Image (cartoon, rainbow, N blue to C red; front, side, top):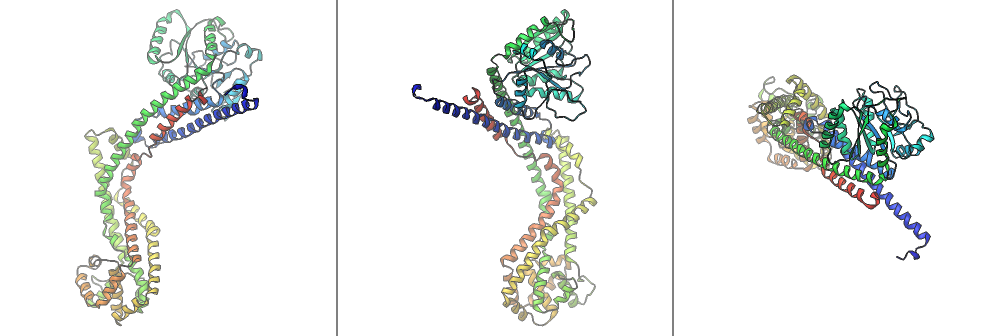
Length: 635
């Protein structure tokens, strides 16, 4: 387009649109950073929660990525790449960090002393506007002009910015903002934490070391983090003397070997007389000039360093995520194998307990509904608390055989059924648990994989309870869950049966005519009706009444009119009756299966490792890199 045809208003509008596009692009980057960090924090939580599964894996790449993206890259975008750089002075105990900062500024801005750990807070000096911009782009940071009392509760992220004369700030205007940090190897935990917090702010790292400190592991590990963040680094060998030449050469070789691709500068500061806490200006002149040089046109350096760190972090993250994902698969596979084993030895037998096929509560409900409609003495049984089909049968058999106190005396079938099933379940759970733990121990003894070893170590802390405790736990669980899940099924069934009887009066009349006048036989008919309609086999009655009951039951069944038996069987096919029976069986099985989880729950807590977010993280990393190199962000 011909520039002469664009009016001033149009030019302004185009500029505003471009600026708005940049703002939206940066905002998109920051939102993706928040999303990424939330996923990474979730994974770190899994590392902590599932120590057995991931205890040997290093979560550092995830923690590092959160530091990089949330605390460095996102604030840099908010503040702008052209913001004045920040140089942080790090080092071990008594390496002279504070003295160097003071000497560069040519006045005492950071109190120093020979006592180890003298500096306990981050102390920043520079142009006030630059300091305000530094803290303003980072919501969690606080700027103070006076050092807080250590006993006073204050936020962790405090930047102490002492008031410096205006003439001083003008004189050192070309220098970056300087931050003096506590000792990186401080025995004071909070001081060491403060030193690491400066990683969020620094654009230039000034590493101050001595002949005694340059090989310290704490310092070398810290420098690894600095390099991974893409921060340009100046290595200052402080307090240099002629006899240190061999140590200096060793330092050069050691650092060049560790970080050959990273931008570093090496400066010697001769040991000299310190006057009024200042090193002679000539001794720090080279360091001051290097800092000024690095500060010029820093925007491109900051952008390039950010891109380098982003890519390096992404590579490390994806590599660790691959290991993390493989470990999750190993845990899932092992858990599947254990569940398959337990399905045979634990869950299968618990699901097949005979009591599940004995819905005596439903039989009782049928007697309560149908008995009064038959106008029989069944009401006598109900009022005395004996409302079960098996009890009716028992009473009748006692009357027929004349054995009032024999095999057919009345029993509480529900209690008897539950007692036997619970005792059987305890045997099943106890046996399955000990067999499983023994198999795991045997695998460990044979040199199984490390995951099995860690699983075994964790299970030692959660051994199965003894049989008495297990029995008490199961009885309590059964009583609670039956009230919660089974009783509502009985209530709904009884309501549906009442409705069915009301809507089908012919059924009641047919039963009356089919079983004339004898109250005991009428009661038996109601019991047989309930047994047939719920598809209970005669063997169930035998379970409670003894082997003699079976032929008697069949004889009585044969004596009943054919129409009655057909009617009972047809009614048993009604949908609401089938549904109630199936719900009863399902709910009762679930109670015992839940009890069986006592065996596998500790293992699941160890091996069930949460969701896998690898793909989401990989997509976000690609999008963040694309956003960073886009013209709207990078320029």
